[in-house]
Each structure stands twice: as C-alpha cells, then as structure tokens.
Image (tube, rainbow, N blue to C red; front, side, top):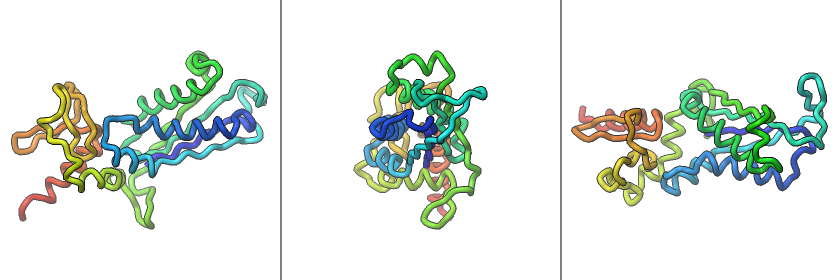
Length: 209
C-alpha cells in the first residue's frame, strides 16, 4: 500500500501533466523483476492524489504559477517499510519529476522538489473493514504468485549470482547484505524484510504439531 500525494502551486501543472506524473509515479515504484501478477496487484493498491493550493509561499514570498513548478511529494507507507524504501523512493520520484520538467537538471540543482516518506504505525491502516499490517499487505499483493504453482520459479533456475524471492517472485541479486533465511539446508533470498517475515510465518505454520 502506497498513498502518494503530490502538492504543486495551483495552475503550475496542466491536466495532461498531472495524468502523466500520476501514471509514472505508480509505474516507477514497480519497475522490478517481479511476476506480472504481483506488479499489477501492487499497482492496484497504490494511489496518487494531486493537491493544488491557491497560495504557495516559499521564504515568505508567494510563488508565481508561471514560475517553474515546485513540488512536495508526500508518500505514506507502512512504518515497517519506511526506512528500507526511503532512498529508492526519493531517488526515483525525483527522477520522474525531473524527466517531466522543461529543464531536467533543475530539480537536482535547486531544492524545488521535496519527497517525504511517512511511516504509518502498524495497525493504523486497513481495508475490507479490517486492520491490515505490513505483512498482511504483502500477503495480499503476492497471493496470485504464491497460490499459482505455474508462477513459481525454482531457485536453481535463477541466473548466476541471483535468487528468486519465494514470496513475491522477484529476482534478487545476491550480495553480502542480501536478506536471507536458511531452511533445511537451502538458503532463500528476499527482496525485503517483509517477504522474509511472511516466508518464516509460512514455515512455522507448516510445522507438524
């Protein structure tokens, strides 16, 4: 679950520009080597909302809508994901804004785009009328992959130096800092701590009483 709010001065962006940015911000957070069904499920619960306040003031000066756009992008994610996602999201979202700008270098030279990641405390968001914790969201998004045997890719078919996350199907590059878990002599790698947690839960549930 990712809730993206884009703030820009009123009149700074056309309808076409808002539509383009909204599409690209959703696409860029899921441009990974995961199965199509997982990417689609992730995009399906990621939302972008635009805010265009009548007055935008910087340093006590009201910004003229005719000036190059300024942005504040506020991204709400489960708190357990915030630290892990911050560098990636800030980099990729700034890239999306810069690519849509008349001067692609402007947002790297002036502090005219701020990206904020806000971590929602565990148990503080939900859907279907029920609380959804970070692991619940991962289970929901990866369910199409986990429950479709044909979607699974055996670990021994991964390219050299990589592994397939058994929860989301993403290809993981193996490094000294990879997130892993060993089970019955096999080492599994994961794209994030959340997928590792879900996998560990599945192993515990599968143990005989």
